[in-house]
Length: 278
Image 1 (tube, rainbow, N blue to C red):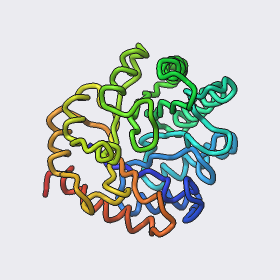
Image 2 (image 1 turned 135 degrees about the vertical axis):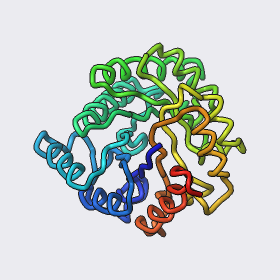
Image 3 (image 1 turned 30 degrees about the vertical axis):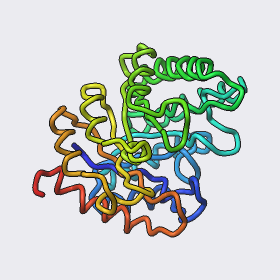
Image 4 (image 1 turned 135 degrees about the horizontal axis):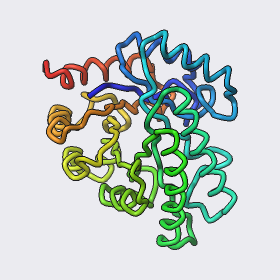
């Protein structure tokens, strides 16, 4: 298992500040000791339309110079244009699919192998079955495109933010219905807590289909500051043979945060557990 950190708390999503350029964020996370960086595709970091070939080459150089890799990428699902793959607006669905493909290409250009998939959300007036069908069709399309780039798509249940894929079973069902050999599932401890579920249960139920993990405690606090039993969680991941990235997705829901502080405290708490020294 390797440790990665999500860039939201260093960017301008969903709050506008604090906000740091991507090269500075890369340096800070590498200095703390992280193996990987999960890049959120939002300005000022990695919005695909803002990055030409030269900019992508420069980002890759910063990564290589600092000895850190792109563990994964994800689009910013909200925002003005909207990236809801289950939207009743056909134009929004098509735009969301296009954005996922752009992020998949950027991920591959930067050496990444994993693209997170948020299944969208059901808008009032849309039947659940219809929203599900739109999301499944979008996933099939995105996964086929990502396969040619050697990128795996992982479906995330997001119960605290959405109403379509909220559970472990929902993520596994969507994965199976997509039929893609490069489609897996993931989970975020924050969303498990929202449902009053135990994160280790997700590990054992997802097992061989588990491709990625987010760590965050209540209120997006750093690991060790809340109620999750991380020692049991890391042991469960080891039990099922998980060898991917354990990624911190923390601190970004408020302006009242010092990004380096939460990144460092999370690393110092989880690293001994992963290394088997705690």
